[in-house]
Length: 398
Image 1 (cartoon, rainbow, N blue to C red):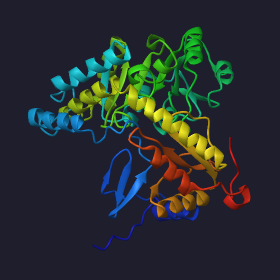
Image 2: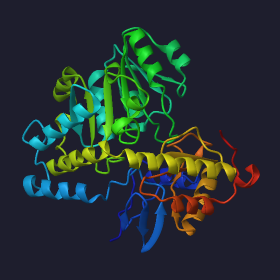
Image 3: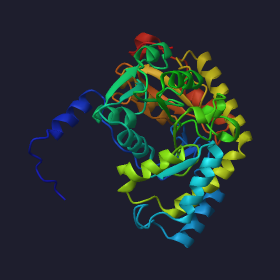
């Protein structure tokens, strides 16, 4: 079908052309199957180093069986928003399981992490408040913060001295990630908790990439760093990464959850996640809690990759999590390297501005417990020795 001629006030074609000229245009790739270790595109098998399936659970037979059983009992959808008829016993049981696992009083389920983050900020922060955010926080947090009537103050990445200088007593909310999604490093949560307590402000963690991977029983970044969960007022996590399903949650005090049930518009006015999905997530949590060996295997693979990449001269970030950013510099160079790996049967996505800062385009390599040692070795062989700075067209970064 021929597309209509697009005219009007929005300049869509010009915006797209500008992105393409700058090597920043995004296109989707339809896959024919994906697990934590492999990917099929156009009939070809690739080693997959771009998924967030950190424990390899997305294809786990027990989780799939729980999903199927949930469909048989509850159907394929929830049928309504949670305050109408969309809140089932399966949702309630998942919330209780999460609260017990993470050491919080209560939990509220959301369809995705983006809406969970935005719901919290929008529901809590008015013009009389302040919002402090790490400069590398996720786009969902940064975007909502820029749209709220409160004043947002961004501090340098993991710079606690800078945050302390910006803080004012009893004025609002400090937000940071547990594991940063593009750099893979962690925020210093003991220091953040101390600053929040001293200043009388609330503290929120986005632990989308730490949950399931870090800490005893996979309880996340706070547990890994020995931080009491009661010192962090709001926890957000997702089910679509290490847990291998989809959806998200917000946890904290019972009062917080009751408040969000009444005032979080993203929750009140959205059709709830299917009950069958909640069944699958509950099964996933049971598996994650007992997955210490998978986490240990993943840790060994991370060390193997880092040692191998360092020996080849590639610049790495200060990350000891499954997210291993290989910094390239310019967008064109990142795309070319990604294509070279793809030609070798290894799938790694190039991450470019505006997702990351200009001049810090990278390959975001992600490891999974589903990978084997020989998979990591194949990735390193495909990468080969790092070319010189001049050849790559970008600067090395620490």
